[in-house]
Length: 171
Image (cartoon, rainbow, N blue to C red):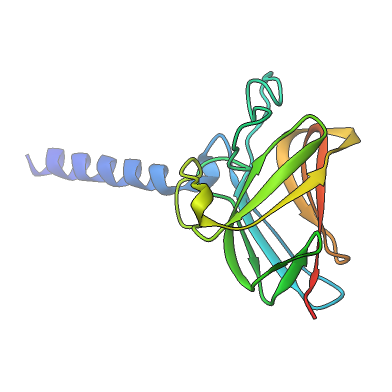
């Protein structure tokens, strides 16, 4: 009887660990962190969904609808100092990053609520909204990716689309 109880407890423990090991998810976690040439540290935590044959803008990240800008928990973006995002002021801090993809431009929302599941967006919590032009890339990404450069350009890359936005220190 003791052996059976120990076996069951061991299996429960292994199952619990497997559920908390985020690297095993279909959309694994990733991080992009850079310090810009003007001293802004940008730290982004997100999950990387894959297209898996789905059509971008239709089957996933639909045009005109709020998207969590990743998968699983809300994507977070943190700044160590006050910044200008596309020329608009945003205080230092941590934010949930959401978006509304469009045909030619994408609206980016920086939410004051960041510690939540990614589908729980509410516009009343926006700290900032900016619209940016969509671009294209010759290097299509099967898996969603966020990159950042020392010059302060953050790019959301997926499929053949690139959505870049500029971050710089607010002086």
